[in-house]
Image 1 (tube, rainbow, N blue to C red):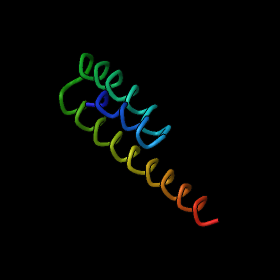
Image 2: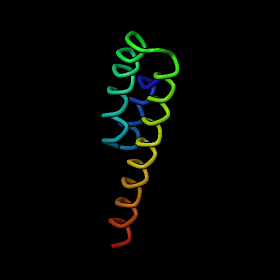
Image 3: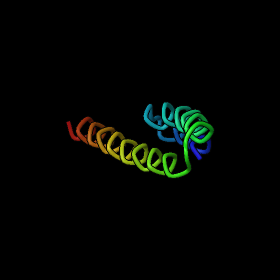
Length: 68
């Protein structure tokens, strides 16, 4: 899931994409091997919420830098 996000880190020059593209597959492998399926699903939902919030902050920072 997360590995296909890595090119976006280069395309958008985004640290959020770079970090989470590495963390998501590793975390999902660890959780998927050690816990029930519903735990993996809940973990991925939480990761996506965090991912969205971080991208939102990054975009607001870019817009503010552009405006000034």
